[in-house]
Image 1: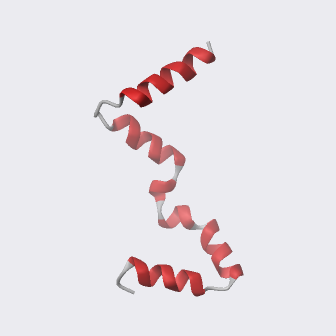
Image 2 (image 1 turned 90 degrees about the vertical axis):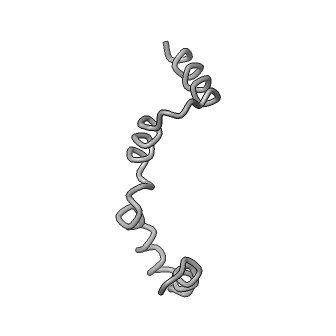
Length: 64
């Protein structure tokens, strides 16, 4: 399989039980989908994000 479309087609052709197994193990295949890894990527990204900063400031203020 050489393209994402071929992979998608193969996944769609799997029986439901096999798709379920794949879904349970998807984070092993794509560690970037892990919530912690994604937050680490966001935190390490130095680009300014005013809307995200504002949202986080509001959220933090609500829990004080």
